[in-house]
Image (tube, rainbow, N blue to C red):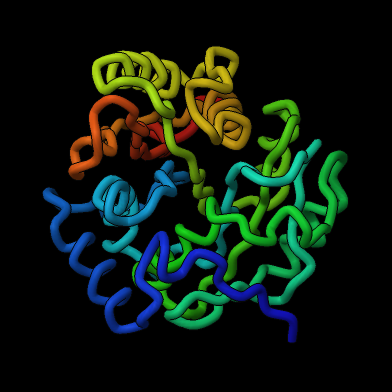
Length: 268
């Protein structure tokens, strides 16, 4: 069995299993409000160190706690920060490890996705990448060890291609991993992130630019998918690294969103 080892344990989140378990559970417990009993179609969560973005990410994952057994597979979408990637890459490994254990890669979903144009099976972009790994401890604590995940790193590609993966792996929860603006002063970051949030709420994939979010490529796909399927989008929380004690001269922005079936179901 081939397992991708954790690359950022001890840096982005605790390497000690008990400490990580307790931290994720505490972040989830601190989320205000009650989750709805029907799980969302997709969540958007940040991927910085938990010290900075963990509370924002938890606001999205808390909405999965009401019906965790309703989610049996996940398509995890994120950017490749360190590999010049055209199209999308799914890993060849069998599982992804965190200090909490291993998460199986959904082999059936990988086979379906790899048959689509622009999707390659390639471990290299996943080596050392944190955008997907940082979501795994939340998924493990919320959905349990049996959940199957299709990890997809998204590079330069069209949103229609990313949406096609979600259509092909029908019934999966989509998890989009992205931070928002990077290294602006705090007032400018909040202004930029508010515009980005407005584009996300409008399901306007074309409005997202590279400087708006490091994961603008993976985010555009689910927004295109949401517009096609008339999903509603809800903003849960926004923050910057300054809210967690970092400097205010150069901040990183974070946002959490839910995508759901609109009231009354699909209209087309």
